Length: 247
Figure: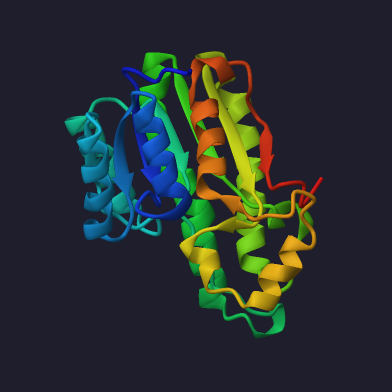
């Protein structure tokens, strides 16, 4: 079993779905965790779950579309838990629409939260990791960043950008013992996918050799592994967790 004892993790979008599962998986392995999301109430609920298991946890409400709130979340985490050694960039939004009908504000908001926000978050956390000469940065991208999809040009552009950002930071900071990897989930059962029409869900299942949707725990297990010392020689990679949906 991997151990994360003594590690401090910050998980964005950690109040539900994949983010919540990642928080619980990291805590189970011994990490103390800060949960960041826009809902203070939901963040605190997950933090309470972690504390009930015997680990330290705090809620750091914030919006990844705000540079000021990102900075405040990192500062609060460091002040209350300690220097961040594991960063999981999971928070994301969608504003779907066909390209010709997509509003500029829908493009800007998705790029701002899903890509620029991750860039700003990494900037805030890197000084702690470089000083400690140890860090794990895990960026959540998506299967559609590799396969494409109709009606998601903004989302796909941001998630594809995350893959490039992952590789760039991995090269820049590998010498400081900081690994940077991306995880690309496929069709995962989460609150975000729960509202999809049944026909859309079935269409995705038809593309999956394992013939089932993924669970948030499937992705969280990959997060926990990449955060561990056992993954210390893996960097700049995209780990596909998609049941074979995209190969």
